[in-house]
Amino acid sequence: MGTTDVAPGGSSNSTSSNTYRSSKMAVWSLDNPVFITYVFYSTVLAAKMILMGPLTGYFRITRKAFVNPEDVKSFGLKETKTDVDVERVRRAHQNDLENIPIFWLLGLLFVLTSPSLFAAKVVFRVYTAARILHTLLYLKGSGIRGTAYFVGILTKIYMVATILYTFW
Amino acid sequence: MGTTDVAPGGSSNSTSSNTYRSSKMAVWSLDNPVFITYVFYSTVLAAKMILMGPLTGYFRITRKAFVNPEDVKSFGLKETKTDVDVERVRRAHQNDLENIPIFWLLGLLFVLTSPSLFAAKVVFRVYTAARILHTLLYLKGSGIRGTAYFVGILTKIYMVATILYTFW
Amino acid sequence: MGTTDVAPGGSSNSTSSNTYRSSKMAVWSLDNPVFITYVFYSTVLAAKMILMGPLTGYFRITRKAFVNPEDVKSFGLKETKTDVDVERVRRAHQNDLENIPIFWLLGLLFVLTSPSLFAAKVVFRVYTAARILHTLLYLKGSGIRGTAYFVGILTKIYMVATILYTFW
Image (tube, rainbow over the protein chains, first blue to last red):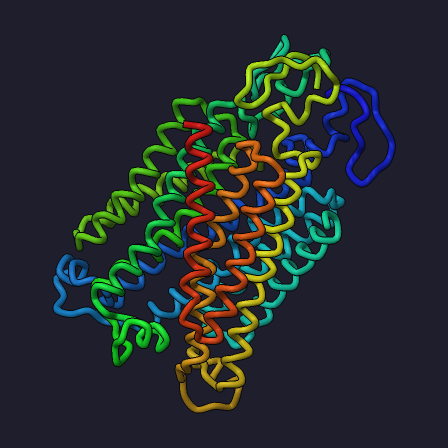
């Protein structure tokens, strides 16, 4: 990696040949445990989001509530229909769409700020737990889903603030 | 790019000063054909998604179906209106929103698992073809769009499984 | 970075120790000012999008317009209700969902094409300004929000074209 790479946030120079871990470049490296933590939790959130589509399909089929005429026909029904449970799953899914892709970006950029592994684990785990909880509470019709929502928002605001503070 | 490059996923150590290519770091490198394949297909999917917005606009204008009073006024119409074709394009677009950003994340992380170029090409091409086909079938009102949808879902589940297996 | 790095798209070799800008790998490096510019503007857009959720909540509360029975109950109301202002904020938010995640991907990949810092700044700033303006115009009910929308679309088409031209 050559010479005079400066460690992220640090000021010392390194002349060793194994400087890639101290190089700023290295932060999106598989050698960086913070990055691996990001990879893991963002994949968990992706898996959680993928499930929402088939879940909507399950509710549409069991509630016989389809919005496309071709689906109505496929299932031997007579007309399109909306159903409160289907609409509820769809709102939970929509809330994911409004939130999780922002986490994917911010988490990736947050890794660049060289947080401690502990801080990164707290942030990524709290966010992941908040989003899974949000969906469960939403599907149950619990009035406290808003708390899980705002925990997610606060986690993201923390990442935004850290990123802007580091790179502005 | 120097000598003694070890393929990602290999086990031999390198003591040369050119270790960055043998480092796992190199997987998001423009020297990695798997990564280039990701860049290409995710850009194709972005282009496909960009088109959905103007396509909705086209249907709104030709069907004279606007939802904002200011648009109704701009086009010399009298009232807001919904139209079945506009709603259909919007559902196809919404389905993209629920699916393609997940691919962008998972594809990027899948590159980190050092798949073979062949495996990566199959996965990325199948997903891209499934999503383009899904939109075409949706716009035509075909009842078999669900097959294209599930091919996309299965492709993503494969990537999720590979990523979690690699990094857990 | 060692020796004989080939510049992206170029053919000359470099033997200096400051080759990171000419290395293909280095483009997602914190040493690359184009990348830092991307990090900054994509975070600004994330912050802008995060605000849309609580803004919708604010309108729901002040307009007493809730869609979930449990929320209706929490706020001591009697029935679910839709409200034109709430629906307008939601459409502005939806438009962000349809656009900004595409920018996060394309901007990241555009960095890989090694644009000049000037070009990158123009593209990222125009896009960010267009999206913020779009929301403000949408919330005001201005008929010219479409112009801001199309500036955003054109910016993304430019990035798509540059990426495909570079990597095809």
